[in-house]
Structure formats: C-alpha cells, structure tokens
Image (cartoon, rainbow, N blue to C red; front, side, top):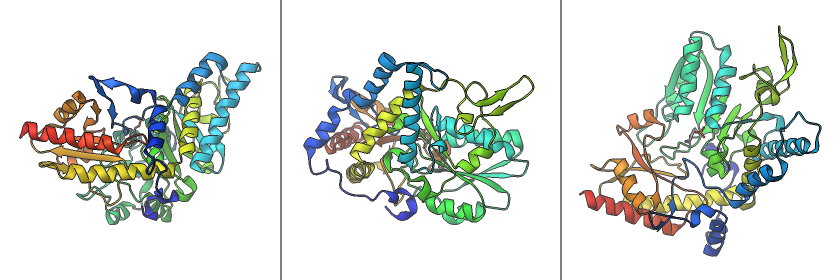
Length: 424
Ligand code: PMP
C-alpha cells in the first residue's frame, strides 16, 4: 500500500499464520461461533464488514464484569465502583495508544461510528451558517451522509459530494476543486464498505488543511482492517465501531483533537457531563466527560478493551497482510466466473469484494450461498449513492476477517460459480 492511504503507518508484511496453517487453526479456535454449523454445513463467515465475530476473551471479559465487578462508574466511593471506573478508564488509555492519540482525553466512547458522526455533526456543526459547505464523497455510508443532511437542514449549510470514477476511486482533482471558500468541514470514508476502496485520506486531509478546513475520517472499516495512526493522518476527528473490531456491539470511539473538542458544545445533556448545575445554567465537565452524558456502556467498553488486546497480540500488520492475501486470491478466483463483474476495482482495496452476476439478483446469490453455510451480504450496504453511481440496486459482498481461510475462499468461489451456472 502506498503512503497516501494512511494505512502505510503499518507496513504490510507476511502474517505468521500465512506460512503456518496450524496457527490460523489455533486462532479460529478462539472464536466459538466459527465451530458451529449453519444449515448442516460448517459456517463460512464472510460478512465481516457488517460485523465481526468475537473471540472468547471478549465474551469472557463482559461476562466477568457482570459476574464480579458490576457497578456504575465515576460516582461511587465503594470498591466495586472504583474498580469499574478504573477498568473503564484503562480502556480509554488503551484506545488512545491504539490510535496513537496525543492524550487519552481525546478518546470519547460512543455507541458506534454512527453515533460518533452524529455527535460531531450536532456539536461542531452547530457553528455552521447559511451558505457554508460541508464536503463528503459519493462513496459514503449513509451514516456519513444523513447526519450532515440533517445539520444542513438545521443551519442552511449546503452538502456537497466529491464524485468517484468508474473504478471506485475519488477523483482528487474534483475533490480539490470542491474545497472552496465556503467549505467549513470535510467528512470522508477511509475504506469503503461497499467497494473496498482505500482512499488516500492523508493526502485529502492535507488538501483540506491547506485551506484551514477540519476533517473527520470514517474509520469503521479502516481501523479493523488497516490500522490507523491519527497523528500520522493528522485527522481532526476519527470514528469507529467496536463490533467491527472483534468487540461488542453498542460501543464505539470518537477520536478528536483536544483543541477542537474543548471548543465544542455538548451533544447530549445529563449526568456525568457537568461541572456545576443550577436551574438557570450549568457548566461542563472537561473533555472527554463533557461528551459522555449518562451511564456509559461500561460492559461494552470493557469488552472493547479485550478486543483491542486481542488484535494487538496478533498485530494489525499481520491481520492486514493476511486479509490482503485473501482478497487478492478471492479477486483472482471470482473474476474467472462467467457473467461476474466486480463492482469497484480501485488500485488500493482492502478486505471487501463486491460483485454482481449478470441477470441474477444479489439477494438470490446471498440466499443460495446461505444454504451452503456461506454468510455474505447482499443489498445496497447502506451506500445507495455508491450503488446509483454503478447503476445497480445492490451487490453481493464478501468481506474478510483475520480468521478466514483460503479454503473458505475456494468454497465461496465454487458456490458463486454454482449460482452462475444454475441461473444461466
Ligand atoms: N461507515 C462505514 C464505512 C461502515 O462500514 C459502517 C457499518 N457498516 C458504518 C459507517 C456505520 O457503523 P455502525 O452501524 O457500527 O454505526
């Protein structure tokens, strides 16, 4: 991968389980669900872009918390509350190190990517005035479109989208031209969940910063599949979801530069986010508490911490390298199937393979594969503008995780070939 992707912070190398299949088998044993059958067939789980499976260590961390340590954080003097607070804050530090944030306080726990983008849109976005522009791209997930549409409706700001080419790459010249005098904010997907495109976000952030415009990176897919260094990217905000990183649902992270977070108004009000309260007015706690109103998702944050430990122990460079090999092999195999067209052929792609079979609805592909125990996704992948660009209503999508095998790719290719032959 080139340095423009931001992924280059983690050099691609061979994964240890590449040359040692027994190591991959050991890793698979960490994920209890991978041992189960679906429709009487061993599960082949290729829907990792939607959500990843959880290792036993994550399941155990959540169960241990509820069995032994359950208490509310931040408000108690008793032993359990202090233990829960410490466990919760430790994950903040761990997440900061994982992203290479300057300070742990730059990590805000959210419900997920969607929640993080809504937080920035409704807090930072409140300063927008009629005529201001927000720039996104044509390949965004709906969660990086709708929050900006809402804030545009509320403030009179205008939402613009940088177009992509037919290979599924952002046209950088057009992107630069759209960075105008009125542009006040840029929000970009790093790794497209619908196409697998890895955008050159570091370069795009640089272009925006030359004009003094802050940038949010949607790292829902890039954080688990490429790894991200927020200081290297120099992004102003970055969001991701725990459940796509082998962690639990219901928890995610918003990274924000301290200088920006400090100036932003709260997103939600309630307990835990205040300094003083009177009926007339209140003052706010410092960041990150200012953005964490109410009882947070304590068990989920602790589960996220276990997921970070798991991923860290394997190493994101190894994970990225293995998924790269799976993707390369799958691309090569699927391309040979008559009537199959890949949707998205960017020069830099990761973990996601989208395709259509001529004359066959993607849902039919998904349903037939399901009968073989193969879980893929079919539909618009919450990226309807991307589908509109390619003039399809949806695609079939296989997406890889650290535990997938080359044999599973063979099974995918054989099953897709079977569908193609069945309908021809
Ligand atoms: N952005 C991208 C690129 C995604 O893939 C997803 C999840 N499919 C999201 C945003 C939204 O994530 P969540 O539903 O976990 O909030």
